[in-house]
Amino acid sequence: MLDYSQLDYSQLDYSRWTFLQQLFRGFVTVVLRLLARVDVEGVEQIPKEGAFILAPNHLHVLDVPVLLMFVHRRTVPFAADKWVGHVFGWILTTFGNAIFVTRGTPDRRALSKALTVLKAGGVLALAPEGTRSLSGGLGEGHTGLAYLATRAPAAILPVVAFGQEKCFDYWRRLRRVPIYVRFGRPIELPPGRRPVDELEKQTEQIMISLAELLPMEYQGIYAKKKA
Image (cartoon, rainbow, N blue to C red):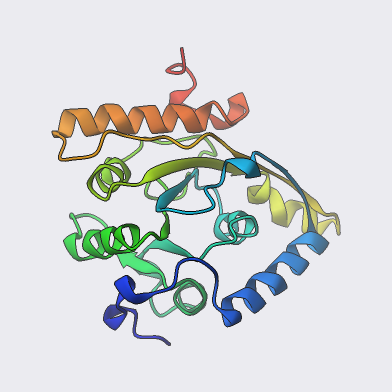
């Protein structure tokens, strides 16, 4: 397994996936096309250059492979350190150069690496909820994404995927699972240091943008905040 702790994120080429990563993405895409019917909208919103943060909702372990089918630039996922030492963690590290974050306390080392990716013009994938939704609806967003976007600075690309959380119900019946992917318009936040209360307002703006891309049953606590 690659020693991600020694990886210099400032020296990576973010303009394209590596050859090995392209092979893996191709394999995953073929498998998903066989096992799922993926309906996607808004791919024209994906920036072709410059740093941005891919900000998805988080329903299932399939979220990352489904979304990265459509992002043709090298993307570094932000992932919980619980995956270190697991097969999924090996995949995230080997094929995504993942940054693993320790939950519960501010992980300044992980945040520093994330800023390095963005300042180098890269793409970072970070779910603002911070963890998988157990209810299926959006949970409370955390300010880490707004902090990174304003400090780098970098655009935020809201994106949602839903349907993949039902995959095993469909596969048990030997049916392809319908998955829906929706990209929203990039969000530009004012750059520079921001107080916590302003980061919280910006985070709510991001979460509402996600809710607006989702059917009502997936909007969670942000269903009533859209208006």
